[in-house]
Length: 354
Image (cartoon, rainbow, N blue to C red; front, side, top):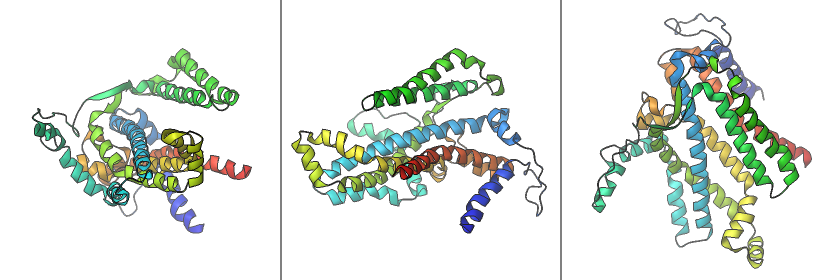
């Protein structure tokens, strides 16, 4: 407990303190550098400053990296696990093939995928082997963007997204406990959405820069490479869970007329909810710490594929702006906490009920 208190929480506290100083500039590498407390000025500049637009786009990129990695790796891993759970011929060999990418470092896989996604080769020339014209998509250097929104409307966008998911959860829960779903999710979601639509203009938009951010198409290549590397990991988790389900339970479901699809949809997958939650938390943390894969595939200076972790490194160890780099680290820490804290709270409540 003492070691964790010093080397984990003590260092986190030191990072928070550093983020509230002005440590940086030409004298930052001195033996005893001067540090002055400036409060939350670094955070205000990150989210509202004119020169911090790159960080804000990196933050938007991180959200898309996380969402697409979760959807792709969890979905593809579960699909492969279901196929292997049916015991096809060569199951052991196939399991090794799908799990092998996990053994590669991000630097190695990033270099391979950079070659595969080169504009004048790799994937783009595959159609020529079938007598078709080559593709001309710039996988890692495209400047196009979709789902663009104004940064001034950030609060409204977040509230609309929250309302959408609350309503979605309410509709899903209607099948099991309609009263609870309506009271906990559906009605609050409708209220949040309606309030945002009616009073969204009253939010302090003037505090934010008027700039556009969206999903950069150049990040598609990195997302594909990350899903390729981590789908085998989720496959292993789900396959272990499927193998742990009693054969008697499976036979009983089949006798009741569930069928293969019904067995996985109504019996097997719901029983693996803890595995799904664990995979989501682990992959969320991985997506928030993406550094070496992006560095290997696009380098540190491609603004279209930036990530807060990469910006933190460049700001801290290239620009020697330690206070600003610490502020970026704290922002990433808080974003990561949004994934892990609800899980810890739910586990604590389940143990207390038990």
